[in-house]
Image (spheres, one colour):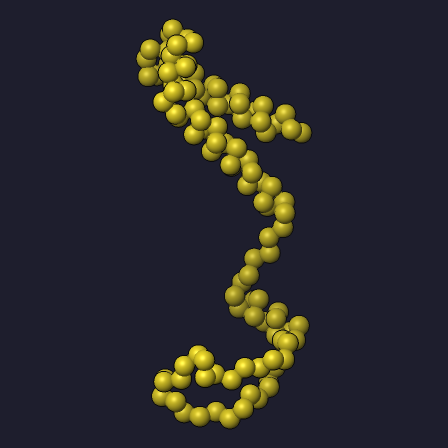
Amino acid sequence: MGRKIGKRSKDNGSTKIENLEVDDVEPEEDELDILESLLDIPHTNPAEYSKLKYVFFATAIFALLSLPFTERIIELATPIANSWLILLIIKTMMFFILYYIVVYAQN
């Protein structure tokens, strides 16, 4: 950890990145541990990404039900959907049904 890299000179803050010296030696394991603890690098695993797919499914279903032509189809299919409140209730039920079919029918 206490490696010297060339001579140090005072540059008064005018050193450019291109002019800095490069150390080609790979860092040791304890150095990487210290760096990781300082930066608090989170470890992600594939299980966390698989949970994210449920959010995408819900977003896609919500976007589909929010489209104007979907509302028009619901209004034509159900004559009682002429009120915005009834339309909202119908779309909410459709969301839960579609979400259950898409997510829980896979298992």
